[in-house]
Amino acid sequence: MTIDWAGLRLAAVTAAKRAHAPYSRLRVGAAGLTSDGRVVTGCNVENASYGLTLCAECGLVSALHATGPAERDDASPALVAVAVVAGDGDALLPCGRCRQLLLEAGGPRLLIDTAQGPVRLDVLLPAAFGANDLAARSEQG
Image (cartoon, rainbow, N blue to C red):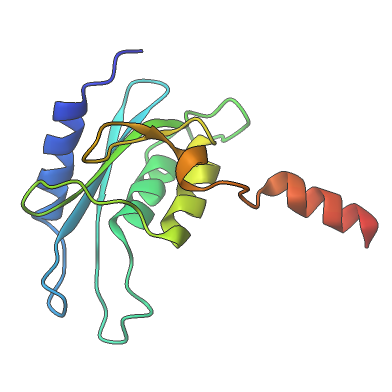
């Protein structure tokens, strides 16, 4: 699958324009390409308590699930590439919480756009905790 990085960045910039960022004034947009060829987007939504703020990547993953097939299974579309940008179009790296969220939406081979070019998520989130870790621990319990 060919990834149109410029198109993903443009979709992320468009999403950033919809951000609700009255406190930090940092508008962030995220756009992701799915395995079935769709582009889904999200933007940050701040809250006065800051801790309840939703990152753009959270909106992106929510949109992935909200716009996907009604019946989800292991073959459901996953993210294959993600661009996260500030309102000015400059690439931003996802925070740790969002890297974990993206891991479960796209897996370790998910490509993340950076200022230096695409990087696999497993490079940005080495030794990640995942579903296999939960399964192994619950069987011990």
